[in-house]
Amino acid sequence: MKKLFAVSLLTLGLGLGFNPASQAATTEAQTKNPIVLVPGIFAFDSIATIDYWYKIPAALQSQGATVYVPKINAFDSSAKRGEALIAQLDNIRATSGGKITKFNLMGHSQGGITVRYVMNTRPDLVASVTTMHSPHKGSPLADLVTGVAPPDSLQGVAFDVFANAVGDLVNLLSNNKKSPADVRAMLAEFNKTGAAANNQRYPIGIPTTACGAGAETANIAGNNIRLYSWNGTSPLTNVLDISDALFGISRFAFSEANDGVTGKCSSHFGKVLKDDYRMNHLDTTNQIFGAVSLFETNPKTLFQSHASRLKSLSL
Image (tube, rainbow, N blue to C red; front, side, top):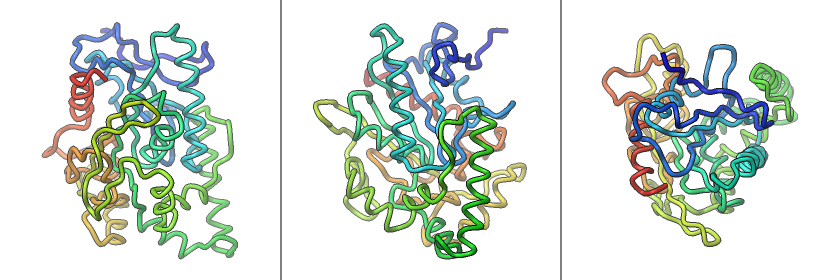
């Protein structure tokens, strides 16, 4: 049976998973530029037998896509995560012998904010940006945590110690030891004030109306970039999905339809492909272990279809 899983690029010092397109059975997802799947909080590529993007890279590869999964800090600001991503993209481009110049960046949750940083900082690296379940206008969960455990309070210090220890453990288990976790830097981007400040700094793709859509195309320093997003609004999707219990509770922090972490309107960026999939916050990554709704498009198919869309646009 032909092996479809990612092989290591450790010999190049890149620390990314890579799926060679030559192993593909078909070419429907064979985009001109490689696809980079950027994880959100609790970021990792693989821990033991657990992949963040459960079976999605292999599904894309089976249709001809070249896929990279970068190593990103579990908890940190999107700027620092973005700089780490830029370094890895530069390495790929430098070692490709001129074959790779740009990338199709696809970010889940905070990964969407991270790829927006890369797009605005290094547009020469970017062909398209797609964000999935990303709280561009913030998440009330961040305000809730900040309110319950404010910085410098006893509760806040205890929260920071525990959360950063978890983040450091995730980084260790995923062989990503470059910098310590910083949960406060992450939270500061997703409370109402921090999200508004980030959108003022990087407004490209953000809707100008409360629940509208952004532009599908952007020209940044002479680089034409396509912009897309999608989201789900069903915290409860599968009785076998243990994350449903968490999102079934967290959904009550919202005043709008949501996936348990990201509100429907908050997810809007660029062209909104769909904002009400029957998916919770983790379903779009095909987690947990593929326990997603049986009454919705499978996440693997969703990514394949989007790759086909990018291919049709010569991206």
